[in-house]
Image (cartoon, rainbow, N blue to C red; front, side, top):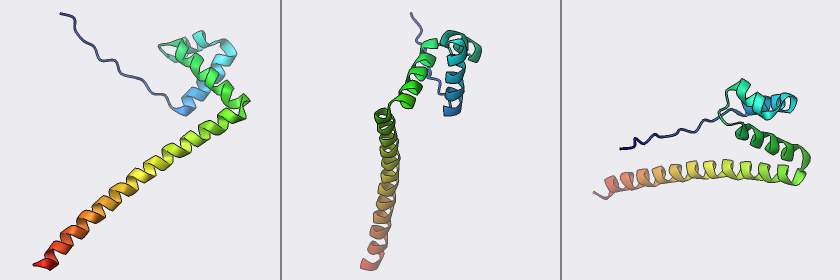
Length: 100
């Protein structure tokens, strides 16, 4: 029987990505990936392409900023929905006590 292995996805901080992109611009993506311990140099290449788009295209930069704002607002909305649900439950609980 073949044993299943679960692959975990690594996540890198924005600071690490920025430094890796700068290094890749200096010495190349493959060498930078090897030096930094990034398993797949194509990941670093994608970061370089993304960085280039951000610096060269204002429409892309604005789109990314809008996406980040939407993500932040969705988190805030979810938090507010949870607060409203808690308040509804509390209201129902306290109203039951007055009906008896």
